[in-house]
Image (cartoon, rainbow, N blue to C red; front, side, top):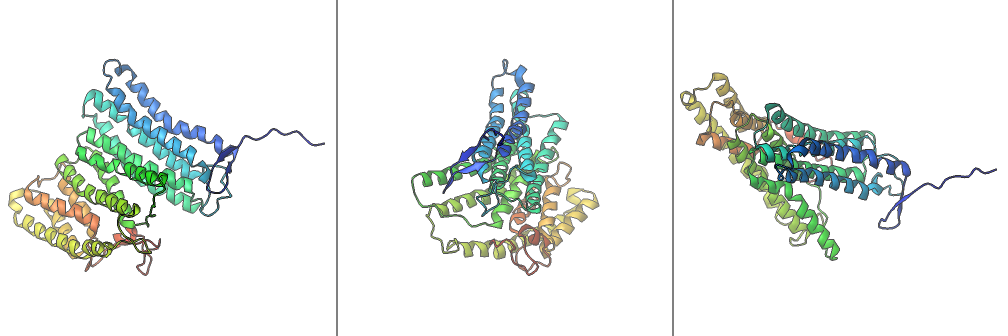
Length: 409
């Protein structure tokens, strides 16, 4: 005798070829996922509720967190049918998986970070010391956790299109929210918000072209774009910490934002077919830009830092700093000049000059060295470097020097 069974509810997602049947178990995991996303925002609302009648502007501070929660939840629902390995469209995983849960927890922390915005609207840009430290530590932790979900996905062999989409959207939302918080606290200039906003008109423009049946060229992966985006996350996280002089964080923001916005503009010209590309999706300007950034410019930057280091040592009595500061500064300038762990040495230079505890102040020579070191962090030390292990990590190069992912700089 056959046992009667209850029909299983199914969700259909329209794909390119045929609908995808999403397992019930996978659908049920959207509920706790929504809890991860909306709980931090509801907590922020509870803390601010009593201030809304007297200061209605607090509502504006609550909107970014709510927008991120709705957006990430929408992306999860929309791309749930992509919870499969690449090339295996017919087989969906029945659960979200550890890597996707890490990404969703990162998104929840981003929404929690947005809870600082209503505080700044109601009480001004000054935060309690503990909360001020928490903002920077949380975002720097989120930036490091960005590596964790990808590592877990590769380890478990569960790299899915859903995970890729959630990761991209969480990164973009995180950079925008953290930039808003940093600007609200007076740690970064308001123009830096263009960095957090740039991704969204770019995606909207592609969507509109596809909607109008206009050609769209797929972008090739570029490690340099990923590196520049990573530096934005590091800059915002460091700027949120209450130990850096806003004069230097403002300068670093202007330096770091330029290549990212130029990159978005160049990418848009390529995807919208306004710049001619070859079969490898490279434009005619690529060789010239690569030559400038990898050969000429880094050499000039290294000479400027080396000269600035000598000038600072000559002016030892002017700065009246402890000998340890001068020793560290001189050593970093020498390392950059000879191309020995140049990016790391440049990072140490920017941290030394930008710190509130720096004895060098904001003199012209210090600002020149700081700005040059910040630029060199983006370009690397280039040709004739004696030892640059950072390039192997950043570009994921193999033992023979080739880029393992098949990407081009």
